[in-house]
Length: 92
Image (cartoon, rainbow, N blue to C red):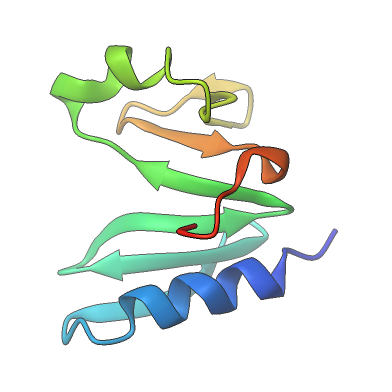
């Protein structure tokens, strides 16, 4: 299944001025890396956002966060989660 290219364009526009931004195709979607670390991305229709380890548990209880991110049925050790496309705002 292809990823949401409109959402990827919105992320690109929001982050485009960062000099260290790199866009990389990964996990069947696209990831946006800052200084070599994934900051966010798009997988299918979901926005993927990386949060710091200290904020991970708190972030899971936010209404716009639909679930933790899993890859091959395992939770990622580097904290990240997806936001449901129905919960997106105009700010991404």
